[in-house]
Length: 347
Image (cartoon, rainbow, N blue to C red; front, side):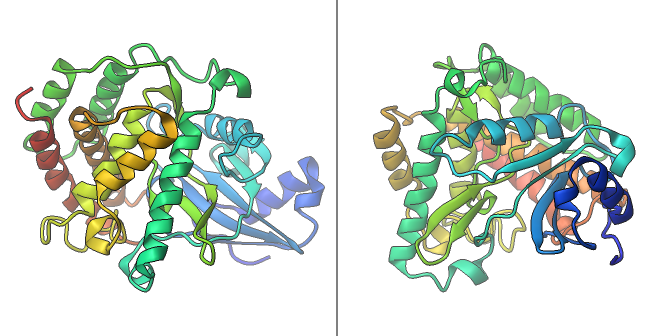
């Protein structure tokens, strides 16, 4: 058995699988950490001719409800019967004694994760357009799923969702705050004072963006949507506002402000993709909604992403997380707060 990567004891995993799912432990286990994740850890596992993926929480500083493997496993399993592309799920282990934290296993889906300019720059304009279109079509497909039809009516509490989001991310920031963050409290207060009314609750991914998808490089078709750790029932425009934060705030035509950022290097108009207005038009046609007033949701997206980056920065300083670019995540927090304040204005 090869040496175990950080956070994954292959000997203990093998023993557990031989008891619970022998078909997943038919041969010697080997595993590698899949790079690019910013929170939960993802591994590619091999056992004989079987290949699958294991997901577990980060190595330390696990905030309450932020890394719930059971919820992630449940929503992926529920969406399997819909048009939303997700991996098949195999096994959920909620016993922390096995690997030190709950984990689950799912299908290994082939595809490319587009997360950097080195990957997206070689694409043709038509390919970039196709990729943007399929990204929006997939989000629209998710937001038009009726939670009742897939057994997820109790997956969240849509009433008061946006106000709870503001409180949740404020509390999460307080638990990760280790330095002065000018503007963070002002942005929180403006968001809390101007919460918009929401429509019917839908399944919200919670971190929907280009590099949380696997894509067939030949057809630009989405083969799987990944990283469902923050999924719930709520206002679908929260997904749209966060996507626009990635697309315009981090990937828009603002050279210098977010140069060489480790979050969205290959995203947005600055990388040759269509403007946000084109994405919003396509989403509106697919869902029949009017997402024109997104300023508040973009400000929420900036605040949420700033808190996530600060949490990763905090864990990095304690040596409790691994991944490329984690040393630069803290540099993203202040520009995101500033952009959020500009988006929400004085309303």
